[in-house]
Image (cartoon, one colour):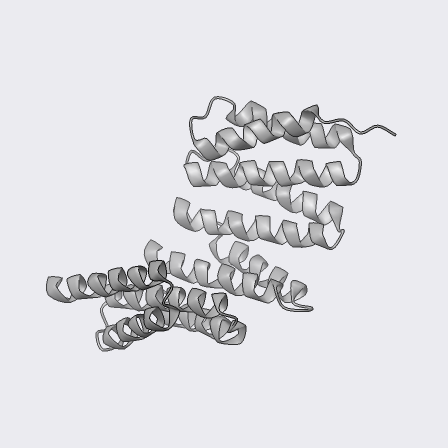
Length: 237
């Protein structure tokens, strides 16, 4: 791939981003189709990654506009395109595609079981990936899976899955992974609050405060503040 061709593809992505900002999904999708076609003519690994990213973005556009089936098919195309590629950028694209597919499935009537299966696939395929960006997709998959369990009233399964996020990523130094740990603990605290288990709820909030009280990131600070607030609330019977 030449520098010129890479520059041209990046310019097309920038045009697509402009269309997204302007609310022109049809034009945005056409640009992604152009990228996919052009990249398909070049077998280089970088062009494959460009095509995968264009497909991912096209899937988001389709899903956002109610074309769920087409969006899921695009996710499958990304996974097929990446195949057995082992570079981090390719594997991240595949992980994102599977997470997006699971999200789409979870929004369909009766799709919860299928969504959980796909989230499990993400954890199985990418659970040992050293890349923090891929690990973030695993954390997202597990948190989303726990949220689905919680929505179905399966409190034990939900808490077990939230605990899995903390166990896997609790010692991570990457900021995005810290955020997923905070989300898992906060959601666990909220869930225990809903089932009136005050001690377990407070324990989850205390863990957020202990881990992230000195962090400077705004989102982590927000989780600490919300944990402190929720812990201060009391039930009266």
